Amino acid sequence: MSEITTQVAIIGGGPSGLLLSQLLHRQGIASVVLERQTRDYVLGRIRAGVLERGFVELMREAGCAGRMEAEGEVHHGVYLAHQGRMDRVDLAAAANGATVMVYGQTEVTRDLYAAREAMGGTVIHLADKVQPQELKSDKPFVTYEKDGETHRVNCDFIIGADGFHGVSRKSIPADVLREYEKVYPFGWLGVLSETKPASPELIYARHERGFALCSMRSQVLSRYYIQVPLTDNVEDWSDDAFWSELKARLPQEVAEGLQTGPSIEKSIAPLRSFVAEPMRYGQLFLAGDAAHIVPPTGAKGLNSAASDIYYLYHGLRDHYQNGDSAGLDSYSEKALARVWKAERFSWWMTNLLHRFPDMSEADLRLQCADLDYLFSSEAAQASMAENYVGLPY
Ligand code: FAD
Ligand code: DHB
Image (cartoon, rainbow, N blue to C red):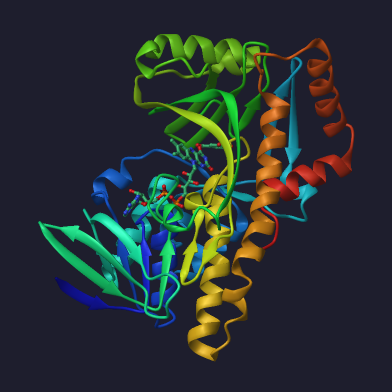
């Protein structure tokens, strides 16, 4: 068995793991990232597109913001289409000048990989059978297999940033871990296409046929989603069927101007609210999707992962640089307090805009009243805006 020793072993080379590794490196704290897949596989996943201001700040601190600042788009508002109207929430006006950055998760991850490579960071791909061990001792370690051999990483701390299906959360004993879950009775069918976005700002649309979202990655790359039944398969949806369903759910003026083209990616994601507590067990700390999932309405998935990384980064820095473990000791509590607020916001936006199979006339009236209230109250818009741009860490 080959053995290496580091300070922080990070399981998962997605955005959470890479961002933490990069932030720690700049503070002189060593880490090793273990990723099950190849880099191309990780970069092939099309996921989030809207970054909160706090995320943008972390990318700056990680020294990885150059391309994001040059190519990302700062958005000052979002549209909600409902009841034949297009209402805009002026994020900047409602949230003291705060804005969001439209820059894809794929690009964030690409920039983080490039930075790790430039700094000689250790990211081990195709690490199989990764297993965190001795979590309650002060000498934890991680084992994995690669090229037919078993390897061991000795460390002070293990970070479980290995997504919802990873091994880390499952390593916490069942009598310690509590899991809270809500599954929604529909999914999102997403399409990426090399077309001009339908609108300069995102449009979240509530429609009797179901929810739709117009988003983008750049001025030549659009990202669209429609709510679909959980029983649908991607193969059921031709590009033509997708475009015609999307148009049917958008306001007429938007549908008429919509540029269509071949899809370059098409996938269905289920919607779920999920939180695992606590986020620390001994020397293992969970971060990102390993500990929590939100339904995507409101773009809080990647952003909640980033807030975990913020708390972990500060906790580890205080531990190594000042011998102060207070940040690590309060990590689970602090991270969960913010996670539950992101869960609430995503649940609220999902309920506001989707058509649930069992909705009564009363439910529909309540949805309309919620939307009417939002656009008749500056206080309601301020509340939506402060959540959308991201609550403070
Ligand atoms: P991940 O990105 O899942 O990264 C975890 C990494 O760990 C992966 O690279 C995985 O290969 C690796 N791994 C897993 N198991 C192991 C193991 N045993 N050993 C080693 N490595 C392992 N959020 C939004 O805000 N907007 C969206 O539109 C959106 N769309 C999404 C669509 C889908 C299909 C999914 C699954 C998520 C979506 N999200 C979206 C959520 C967002 O992408 C996640 O919140 C974000 O990726 C979390 O980052 P992470 O690094 O914590 O986890
Ligand atoms: C995107 C996804 C979201 O869930 C959202 O709320 C906004 C944008 C996107 O993929 O672009």
